[in-house]
Image (cartoon, rainbow, N blue to C red):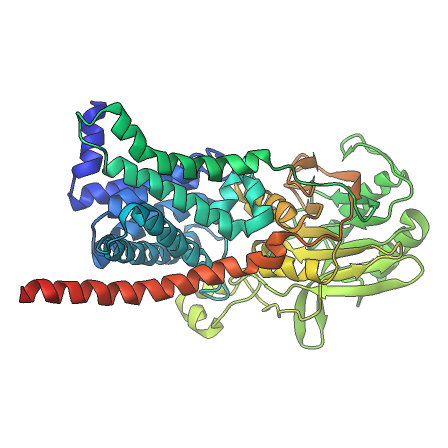
Length: 539
């Protein structure tokens, strides 16, 4: 039975059989991500997708790849259905599936052309590197298109709970994606081109040595790496407050209730009050910074007297330390998702406006067009948020510099790179996951935050209105996490660091480099295959 399945996988040329194998590969890709956490699935998934498209032309590979892409993205982002229902989820899954299908089709063409070259023993490695470039380029394109992109569920992010995540310190998330596809392709080539029976164990073993050596290097090197997570620039005490407030975009709350919930937990942190139902492990003195999540002030203290008085009283008389909190505010004609820094005796000292608001969540691109398609749904988003232009660096009275990212922004490499290059010694990620309930969205975003910690070499404090909230060391390890959907706070001395990691210094070139390489390989492959066909016809 097993031999029959293996032989069918190796030799079957039925198109719908290939499509089934591709879809199965897409499912395995999805299962490698939180909350399923079957991390070997990322290798199995790419193995099966590549197996499904071997020797296929552009259009058939595009269909197989689109099916695989829809299976992958539809499963890994099913949490979207808890927000606006199945229609946006289905539309996004189709768009992303077609983009994956296009990448798979390009990979099939490049693969076929490279096989026509006389590459000798280097052939599997050259093809594997090229295929890795194509799929890494797909992630780059998904991060910029459409409407600014959605760089979610990148292959490298699936390995956050493994020793392989340490590669990200050196080669960024994109580099890890490239390695995943590279190794998966090498194993595929050995699978579809076995030595014939009777070749002998020695000959079979020799042919496997190059793949084995490459696998040992890729899988073994990070096992020997120890990442430094110490506070080489000192430490500071941070208190991060989760108010367990339903701060969803369409939630209906009594005005000021979300602010009051965060104030209540914050007061327990500084020992002003106590409540048994709060997950606050200790009252804390000498706090250097308190952090609240995105949208934690539902009344704008920068323009309204009552919330300004509440925050000022708390900061001046009780906390006696800086407070960093999420706010929504109008500044002129612009409406911003904002983070505000409130200092004792000073009040509002600095602000950061979200640079990458969420399409169809915080603004509607081409509103008139989409309003005509789905007026009831688009009408729910009453105001379009503007994109901010200020840097996300906050300088604290103790001399420390922290960088702020708001929710969806954690998925964009360049935003965290900019913060590190501007001097951020730790990262504060303030998010609001209320709209997504107890779905996989929270744990997937927490995984991105942990990868950012490794990539940047910085402690990451990720605080949500409802969870997942956590503090992650510079090596990606979990320092502390709060129970979701329960009010609580984390109080920790976190490490501050100034070092620039190789990923921050050079990782920004990996994805664009892969994209340029793929854009060169594809037309060259098309021309090469066309010339070969014309020569074959003449002969």
